[in-house]
Every structure is written in C-alpha cells, then in structure tokens.
Image 1 (cartoon, rainbow, N blue to C red):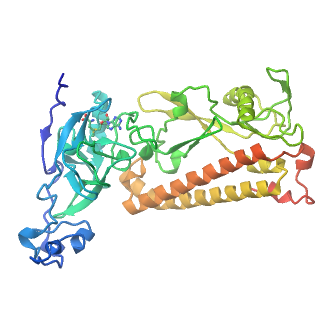
Image 2 (image 1 turned 45 degrees about the horizontal axis):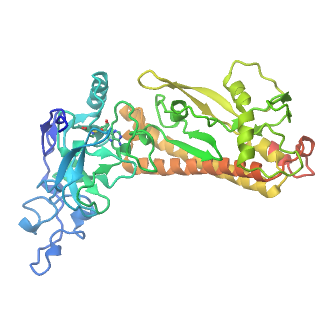
Length: 472
Ligand SMILES: C[S@@+](CC[C@H](N)C(=O)[O-])C[C@H]1O[C@@H](n2cnc3c(N)ncnc32)[C@H](O)[C@@H]1O
C-alpha cells in the first residue's frame, strides 16, 4: 500500500526573504577569479583551483571570464543531484540518491524562508505547541535562520544521521550566504542521504535519534544542547556531563539518558563511604574513613587481589545502598566520612519531564592516598592535571564567547562565530577526553593495584605524600 504523501508545503528553489530584502551586491564587492576557459583544458573553467571556489564564493555572471562555461554557479543554476522521496521506518520521509553521487558533489540547496532568530525562536515554539514533530529550521548565521516548514526545497526531507554521508556548507552567492548539502563521500544510487543536524539545526521537540549509527549521540541535536558521554566500563556507567552554565545564559536542560533507560546497570560507580555494616551475604563492609569506589568489598583483603569483572559486579551490587544514600540529600552528614560524589538536582527538561542527573566531584587526592603504587598515583595525578588544563582552556574560551551571547541575548553557543564555535567544540572534546582519561585511570588503578591501609595512607612528609594535602 502506498504511504500517504508528506504534509503539503510550497516547493521553492531560492530562499524567500521575509524580514528584509535580498542584498544587492555592490560592484566593488564582486569577487572576480582569474580562471580563463581553455577549450583544450575543460577543467580550466572555475574548477577546484578557482579562487572563488577556494573561498566558497560563487562567480557572478557577467564578471567571470569563463562566461557560460563557468562551473562555479551551482546554487544559482540549481545544479542539484537527482533524488527521490522515500518513506522511512520511524523517521518520516527521507531522500534517496537517484543517481551515483560523487564525494564533494553539490547535492542541493537547503531553501526556505529566511527569518530573524527571534522569529525562528517564536516559530519553533509555536510549531512545538501545535504538536509538529518534524522540525525544519536551521541556522543561517548568528542573526538569521532558514525555515523550510511551510516553504522549502527537497533538502527539507533529508534526515539526520550521526554518521552522515552528506554535510552542510555555507556559500557566498551574489552577496548572500546560502546553505548547501554536499556529499561527504561517494554515495551509490538508492542510498538515503543524511547530514548531521547537530551544529545547524535550530531544533524542535526532543527526538530520539533512529539513525542506527554505532556512534549515535542518542538524540537529534543532542550535541548542540550540551554533550553527554556515556562510558561503559565493566558494567558500570559513568555519566560525564558538561556544566551547562558554562555556555548558557540560562540553564540549558541536559538530557540524562540514565533516567530514560532504567536497566540493571548501576548508575554510579562512585559512592560515599559508610559505617561498617553487613551486606546481604553477612560480609562486613568496612568503614575505611576514606572514599571508596564502587566496591563495598574490602579492597585490602589478602593484601593483593585480582579484580576481575565478577568482582566489580559483586561490588556494584553491594554499592546500591550507598547510591541510595547519596541520592538522599537531606540525610544528615557524618563528618568522619569523606564525600566522593556530589549529587545535584537537574533542571526540568523542556516538555515538563523532570530529569535527574549526578554531578560528580572526585576526591582525587583521597583516592591517590589509598593507592600503594606510586606509579598509579602519578598516573592519576597527571590525568587530573590534564583535566584541569582542559577546564582552564574552556574557561578562557568562555570569556571570548560571552560577549557574543550577551549581544544576541541568546542562550546557546550558536550565536558565536564559527571559528570560535569550532575552538569551543574542540576544547570541549579535549575536556571530555581528559575527564574520561581521569576516570578510566582511577578505575584501572583501583582495580589492578593493591590499596594501602588507612594508617599508611595518612600523608606525611616521610612518604612524600604531604603535598597531596595542598592539592586542588
Ligand atoms: C528536516 S525534517 C526531515 C524530514 C522528515 N523526516 C519529514 O518527514 O518531513 C527533520 C525531522 O525528521 C525526523 N528525523 C530526522 N532524522 C531523524 C532521525 N535520525 N531519527 C529520528 N527522527 C528523525 C525528526 O522528526 C525531525 O524533526
């Protein structure tokens, strides 16, 4: 049975400017390349070496010496690849390549109504209120967006993938910036086209991503809402989340998928220490007076233990009570116990669904203090140093970004210059890597090296650990 056609929209192949006129290119602003068409060398006509191509600027008709042979007017001439609409599983309509598309090829322009960001924000909210699940607004620049909801080109049907075969690129065409979809790789006929919405999409209701890629980020636009990295280590999950206040004027709600996927996997491997108690197997859980990680089992039994996955799993089961205690913020605190994890309530997600998240503050010094191996301690401290450096880099970038955010009264990093946004993304990735390295190093070293007794662990001048007391 034929699926019903997509909801109606007006098909356009050039942008429709709603809040202003199309810019008129001044003669002095026209970029003229140096290419000259040579019959014996067809590639001479504005190919990859054309100065305009190299600066993502289309040649202006009447000014390019290659005349009708100029190959650098693809937006203006709507030189689109052949495509066809298809109904997908769970992702609405999508667009298939209807010819073999070469890597780098211009696929089509993303056309729609050019609107101000204020209008984009208003419309986005209105569409959400109307219950529209498909969102078609993308960023054009810091001030403007393209809305292809009511009017647009076929590009409005291209779905998101976290491992896409296309990408968006911005081109300067007759003085206006236009968004094109370009092939990132060779795309065989019949393949669905996709690009990564993360950095262009204005967004809509939170939508679970069904792209099926191994590297799927979980939600459409998840990265532009704040990163989340879920790391699975020996059946344990650590959730590392960026503090949204770092790049938001208001709090951007972050999604905590641990809430959405209640599995048997414990949410935290990091728990607070507790008084001696009995576990379900009548084993005594010692109060070491120092932070412990995941395991309530006495790490020091037998002096040295092989900590395999089974041990970690047993430990995690025993840790449940500790996690429950942690979540009870109102519980009176025992000052003898060092707290390893801080738990903070998260803001409410758009749509009213409350999400809880864990904010961890590791007591790295306390952890190192208990490790018998100096090499292990050094590794962890080195990782922490790297993490602090990465955090400092983000802080200084935020100082650069803040004026742009304030100027545009925007609540996200999308109003900053692309170059700065790229630096920000790179710095964020470095920060996440540094966080990951630190957590991984702690888990590895706690699982594979013996612990010292509490008495030995107390920092003294003699054992060279005194400096730890003054650590960060
Ligand atoms: C620009 S539209 C793409 C065309 C849309 N599928 C349609 O039928 O008109 C974006 C919307 O498509 C859906 N979509 C796109 N990619 C998706 C994905 N990877 N997983 C789930 N839904 C997706 C979401 O509803 C999203 O808001």
